[in-house]
Structure formats: structure tokens, C-alpha cells
Image 1 (cartoon, rainbow, N blue to C red):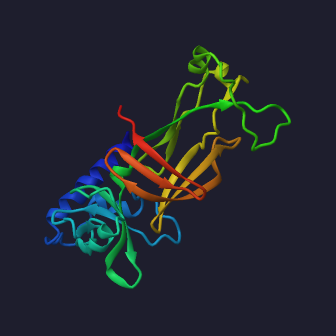
Image 2 (image 1 turned 30 degrees about the horizontal axis):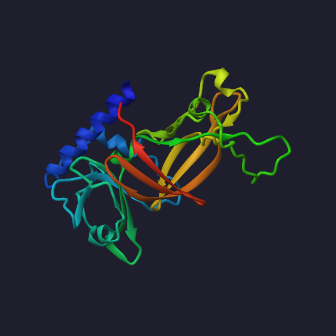
Image 3 (image 1 turned 90 degrees about the horizontal axis):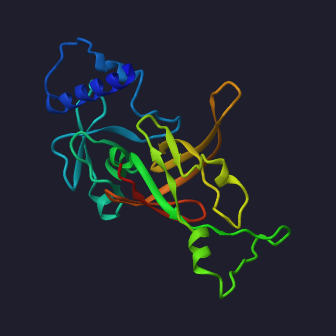
Length: 254
């Protein structure tokens, strides 16, 4: 509860600074200064992304961004990024954004990601397939007979919702884990494996999605990380490009 209050209070300070960036604070320190010690977004070593809040004055061609309560807002050109369809989630005043800058033009953005739009529950539906026989080749297809009863087809091939929840503190929650042990027992059909992502980061325009497991001391240990690109993002639609495929998601409403 204390951490939640701290984050909300810090954001209020940042928003206030957006509207009063021209006023001096005569050197006095405010509680918001501790954002330097505990940022809302944890930035990885080697990540050159700029993080901050979108301020008044932002539009389709520029974004005015406040990086901290100690600085004045910066104005960054995002027109090329928008033309190249690399603005993911239109920034509104107060939204937290991540900006990858053009390496040759210091005031021009290559990629803009609206972190507040990225957060939430993203899902897609999967259909199970018939289990392969023991000893069958991995690429062998299992076909149903033409006269297979529709009642069994409907019973066996029920869609299941897979996905993840992206949370504010760089953590994730997998969606689709079945807690009923009966559903985990062998049956005539099998669902594809579910990636159990637990952490996420923005890294130089990419998303890093990490699977993690708890060790014997209860600490999360990363076991694998996927580097993912955002193809497009709308308010209720997300398309991600993985190393071997693209996956579309819809936003799950609560």
C-alpha cells in the first residue's frame, strides 16, 4: 500500500511539473526527487530508451516529455515515427512513454511506445489438437475420421484463452494456466505449451519478455527471455513479432 501511494504521489508531482516547468523551486527538495532512487520503470543496463510523461503540447508530430521533476520538458519530433507506423499507442497527457531516439538526429524519435496503453491483459484463443501416438514423428498429422461425431468434436476441441497481463512494475502474469489437476491429465487432445512470462522490459525499441521460476528461497529466477517487436498496437488490439512467428492479441476487459 505504501509503494502504491508513493508511485501515485510521484506521478502527481510529475504532472504538476508538466504545467509548471518554467517555475524555479529555489533548490528545495521534494518527495518526488526520490524517483531517481526508485523509478516507475526499471531501466536495464545498455538500454538507451528515454522514459517520461507526455505533457501538454504533444500532438501528431511532436511529443513534449517530462523525464523527471528536476528537469524541463523536452520536445521530440515524432512525425517520421508516425509515418513509419512506429508510434504504438497515441500518447495523451500524463501517459508514460518510452522513446527510442534516431541515432543520427538527436531530437527525432524512431519508436514511441505508450507504456500505459501497453499495460493490461492481452489474450488470444487456442484450439487443442489430437495427441500423437507414442513413437509417432513430431511432424506427423493426426486426422479425425470423416464420420467423427459432432458431439465429441464439440466436447474435445474447446478453445482456451492464452495470454499475459503486463503490469506497471515490470512484472507479468501468464493467462491460461489451468489450476484444476483433472484438466492436466492425459486425454485425447492436447493444448500447445504456454509461455509463463513473469517479467517485461523495453530495451532499445524491443520488448524483452522473460520466463521465470521461483527457486528454493522463493526468489524469481529468469530461465529464458524472448526479444519481441511490436508490429502494431491499438486500444484493444496488439500484434507482436517473435523470432519464429507473429501473434495477435485482444485486450481482455475486466
